[in-house]
Structures are given as structure tokens and as C-alpha cells.
Length: 354
Image (tube, rainbow, N blue to C red):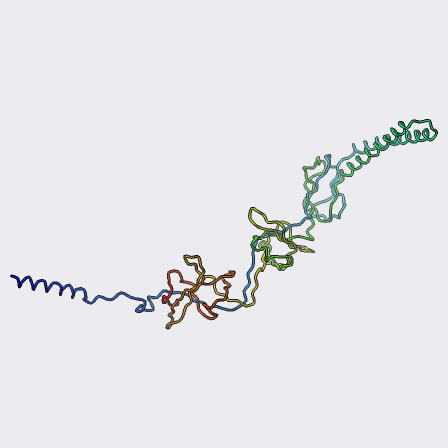
């Protein structure tokens, strides 16, 4: 009976051992992976070449000679002397408000002045003969001065009945019609002079140190074909807008014949220009958990196979798919970096190109 139990215990472990070793394959490791098992990536070389960075913002075309002409005094419009599209000179009469009442008042004052001057002359003669009083002379003199002042005020009002062009330009639009009542709140016409316009844009304050008077800028107009103008900044704002932390820049265009006020403009300013620098595709840069920028350097180990190494980098600037790096002993020009497929791979892993 004892011998039977002993044999049974011996046979079972042997069977389990044979079952465990029975022809199963070992799991794949980094060393025994085939080329088809490796992660697929795309590579690009680290280059030493020129690099430039541009600030691109939306701008606007403005002019300080774009005004609505209004009558300074109310009254009936008896004439409008211009038409839309007409060129006018500075001081030219645009419209006339009825000032007949003012003319009547002026004639009345002129008559009163003549009489006051006659009375003053008589008082002066009496004063010379020692007959008239000093009080009567001063009263006559005051009456003359008062009437002259009233006539001067009335003359100024009469002048406001005539609307004149404050500068030379073109009548863009006529709003009023002859026979309408004019007033300060009712514009008569729009006068525009586009011979000199300004390109105005707002830029983030972080670029203030790199944008000065004379800084080159390139201006294009998205709604005006392929027009591109090379200009220089003529004025940099002296105030930071607290709501969006920006400042204004401006460039003036003389002898303009095509641009109109309020046109949209796209302004490009080159704030960084390096003749030779270490440049890589910006898609190759990743961030680790410590928020450090890094790339994977790929070293060839076989046909189409590479081993990657994580290298921290310092990015100076990025622009149009490229990044300018600070020089480091950790990498050199000509080495390959992973541009696509870096997500999911780790330091020391083997990869293959697509």
C-alpha cells in the first residue's frame, strides 16, 4: 500500500514539468524583436543654416484726413456746390446755409453804429470845449465799442453759414440735399484725402524690445490681390493698453493712389534674424513631465534600424515649422532627430524608419 502512494507522488510532478516545458515560445524582447516589430518613425537631420522669425499681426489702413462736414449753425441749405467724386481745394465752398436773418441784423447794427459814432464825435467836441461831461463821453465811447463787438460776433456767425473744405481732397459722399435744414448733428458730406495713409497695428508688449522706429515691416492686403509693400516703422506707441497688453505701431505711406481707409492689412515684422544657427523641425520637439523640451537623437544600428536617445534642448524660437536651438555638446549638426512617431517611444528603444 505504501509503495503505490509513493509512485503516484513521483509521477505527478514529472507530468507537470513536462507540460510546462512543452514547446511554448519565449516572450519577445528588445533584443529579439524583428524589424517589423519596431516602432516606425520619421527622421530629419540637425542643420546649421540661416533662421529668421517674424511677428505677424492684423493691421488697418487709416488717415487723419477723413472727415464728415457739418454745419456749425442751424438753417436752411440754400446751395450744395459739390458732387460725389469731385476734387476740391482747401477753403472751397461746399455748401451754404441761409443767413438772411443775420444779414438783416448786421444792417441794423451798422445803422446803430453810425449813429453811435456820430454821438461820440459830438461828445468829443464838447469835451474839447470844456462843456460836455466825462460821463457822457465815456457812455458814447462804450456804446460804439459794444456795437462793434456785436457786429464782429454777428460776422463770425455769418461765416459759419458757409461750409468750406478744411483740406484738399475728394468728396466721397454727399448726405444732404438742397432745401433740407442743416444742423451740427446732420452731416452734409464726407471729405477724404488718401494721398497719405498710415498702416496701424497693435503688437504684444513682449515684442517691445525688438520693434523700434526704422524696423523693417512687410505689409500685405488679403482683400487686395497679391499687393505687398515693404515699409519701415515710423512710430512706436508710448502706451501699453492694459486690457490686452499691446502697443501701437504705425508706418506712413506717401503718394498713395490705391489704398483706402479701413482696409485690412497683414503686417509682418522680422524681429529675429540669425545668419547661421542650429535648426531642426519643430515637430521633433516634445515636453517631458518636468516641462523640459527634448528630442530623440537616432543612431543607426542596422539597415533601416536606429536606437533613440533622449536629449534635452533649449528652444530659442520657432517659426514656420522650424525651431532654432541653443548650441549644446549633447548633439551636433548632421545627427538625426525623430520628427514623427516620437509619441510612445522611450529612451534607448530601437525604432525603424517608415
